[in-house]
Length: 267
Image (cartoon, rainbow, N blue to C red):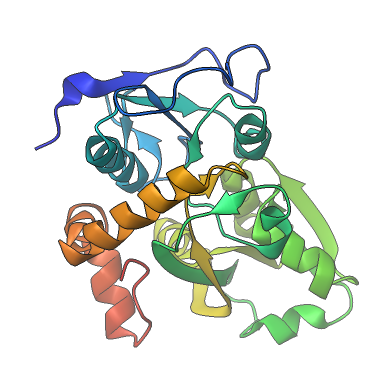
């Protein structure tokens, strides 16, 4: 059991916020481990009824801090602010369901993957759209969350589609629900949840058309920390830590996806 007294919350740096961090802070055993995440992505990064950070990524961060014997400080901020905060030393790591892409690797490093997912589609229930190829037709309108791989993929692969981009993923869902967009491009588990929540108006095309992996973001040059994080991920997997998180937060999703012949994200 993790000692919750070691769990600290920082609310003063909602964005990258230069001045909130100090690159000269100690980073060894016993020093505070500052992990950035956007707390608006349940069940991975969210807040409980009391307003405390909760979810798969929060539990993963706590286990990592315990493994490193360092007090934990969750630094909540917008997703778009995470990489700038890491590069300027305001946080030590990113654990925020972030896809390890070649583009992001140009500015930060990543751990070994801890989750395997992909891009899927939320479409109108009565829509004739059955695959990503149907979005290549003229006049299509797609929506995506800003700075996500869904937006990047749409820019690179659907140049003729009209794009509507929002900071909040629920705004993207609303565009599909209300018929202003043909599809929302986002990760598989989120699409599953949004289709379930809006089953009268939408449906999810859950088989990923692009496979992705999530990893922990680490500043370049921190090979020592990267090795420690990779060691933790290996140990956590061997000790069935990811299975335990799936059982606690994603039991229904795991059962549904595996029943549909789609590999589960945490494996």
